[in-house]
Image (cartoon, rainbow, N blue to C red):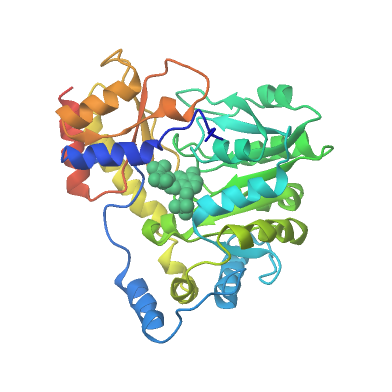
Length: 378
Ligand code: PMP
Ligand code: GLN
C-alpha cells in the first residue's frame, strides 16, 4: 500500500503518554485533566444511560443539546446560531476540524497554517489534496505577523486555520488580530476554521475573542469547540461546529459519512449540564491558579518562560539548560527525572532551533509541585 501520509508517524501525544506510562513518569505531555469531571455530570449521563437513550442520535445532534449550545453561545458572545441549521454536534473537535477542512479544501487549494500547529490540521489538509502554507509564530511571544500572512495569500488561498487560545503556545488573539484577518480576506474567497476548544481558559483578565464576534468573520467561519476541555471529559470525545447555514449544510454532508452521529446519552447529559453557567464560567480562575502554582515552582529552575495567556499549556525555553534537540530532551527527562513533556518542534514543519518544551498543567496541585521540583534540579 502506498501511504497517503508518508511523512506522518504516530502522533506525539500517543508516543509521549506511552513513554510516560512505561517509565512511571509524571505525564505533563498529552493534554488532558489529571482529575475527574463533576459527579453531577456523571449522574446525568447515568440517568440517560439507564433510561433508554441508547440508540442513534439525530445526525446533527440531539435538539436539546443544539438548543442549549445555541443559547449559551448567544448569552456569551451575542451571536445567534440557529440550532436546527447552524449547530452540529461531533465526535470531538478533531472530527469537526476534519469535516470543516474537508468541506472547503479541494486539490491544489492553499491553506494558511500558523505554526506551531495542532497536529491534526496538516494531515486533514493533505488528505484533501490541499497545500499547507506556513506562517511561523516565534518565541517568546508568538504574535501573528500580519504582513507575513498577507504575503502568503495568493489566488489559490481557500482557507485559514485559526486557533485561539493557542495550543501549544497559550497565545490568545486580540480584537486587532480579528480585524487584521477580516481586512485580509474581505475581498477574497477565503474561509476560516477557528479552533476555539480552550474558549473558557484565559488568564490575567483576558477575554476570548471568538471569531464569531466579528460580523464579517462570522459569515466565513466554522467555529469549532470541545466539551472535553471545558468539562474535564476528554475521554467522552464530544465537540461541535457552529457555522452559518450555507457552511453548516456542507459540513453536515461530510459529518454524516464520517461518524453519522455522536453518542446519545452523553448529549442529553450535556444539554442539562450546559444550562448552568456556573459549570464553565470559573474555569479560567481554576486553571490560572494551577498555571501560577506550576510557574512558581519553575521559577527555581533554569527554564525561561512567559506565562501562558490561555489554554492549559505552558511552553518553556530550555536554552539555558541544554543544546539537545527537544525530542531527545523530552525523552531523556521522561526516563531520567520522570517528567514527560511535548517537544514543540513536532508542531513546526519548518526546522528551527527554538528549544521549547510544552507542559500541561491540568493536573492536581501536588503533581504540579512535584514536577516543578524535579525540573528545578536540572
Ligand atoms: N484542537 C486543539 C487545539 C486541541 O488541543 C485539541 C485536543 N486537545 C483538539 C482540537 C481536539 O479536541 P477533541 O478531544 O474534542 O477532539
Ligand atoms: N489536544 C491534546 C494535546 O494537545 C491531545 C489530544 C490527543 O491526544 N489527540 O495534548
